[in-house]
Length: 514
Image 1: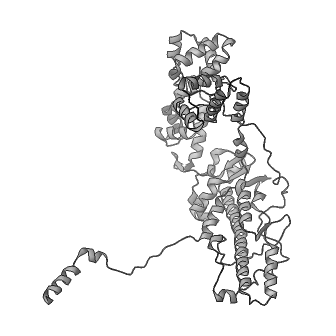
Image 2: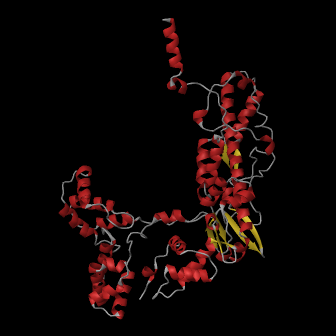
């Protein structure tokens, strides 16, 4: 038995499974971001247009943070920065250790910096704030669907048909198209409105809605929408009738610009066909796309930076919205002063003080995060401006130098991901227009002389070539490649095609005009 036990243990010791479960000590070096660092990165990514909303959220969550119209001390200097705690209420514990109670030091929160003016604002006094503080006007408009419902209200129909029509109008997308299948609309009416109907009845209501304004609304596809618009103006002449025939029988050929086939099929000469094309290109491919478009109010670009050319000297300023007047609540400071005068033996009072301290720390951290955000934005934009100095002086896109994120990161000492966050969501206003910072970044391309040029320069030259080409005989990608190579740019045809697509320029056949 004794020998058997030894043999069993020996076998067990050599078991691979047992060996796989053995313990060992290992050292690993890991780098993790603190919650404060993560919040700072998120704050850095917020564009100026949304910064006010982000600050509003913080003000609602933290009563120790205030916004004021006057310059007040934010209680924050390089010598008084603490390791800030998270301002998340879920992480706050009402009961702390005895050491925390006995070692509450409020000297960093009261009786300091009371007369010091905040220095975290990166404003330029040479440019008044009044212009930046103006409220962006927003038009109050009737939405596209409200306009359709108003027209529906003028129809003389019974309640049943009106409810069917309302369901159809609700299914029309913002471009004015009804892309939902008729059978699906029938099912929706049955399950949601408790209305038993059929496809024929729904189609009849759809035809009535297709008579609404703007012309072409309620169509299932582009062809139907254009035909609805043409039938509205059928009395305007022969060219409209011919345009209806073109879109009815030669729609695919028309979209692919196979004009010769259409002319032969309808026996049209060049002048007649030119009149037909004029009728079609005047139609609206998105009948609901520009009606009551309230989203346009949200698409206004709010520049994060302004670059002025002062007699040849470039001056960079931050939008004043990036420098909100924030401070720590005086009321919360007064609470700490009252505690400092008390006996400091009441445990409940000490718990309240810990809560106040946490909120003040969070407020001070947020103010400091705003400061770091401004410094990062300013240093990044300053470096971009210096790097692309010639463009900001002349506005000529061909003067843009090859520039990648790494170039700016090395000069600013920032991480590439930080530069990327700034470049992807910020805009700069110049005397030549407003540009997204990402616009200034591009890869390099070698010329015959070995010089490194920006791909942005190549795209600009390519765009100019296509713009000046004869529309009766557009330049093919092969010919564009040859012309660029003649100018000294070593570029392949597939690269020309890629750049053309990035510029949203169609192929030569689709650029052809009569």
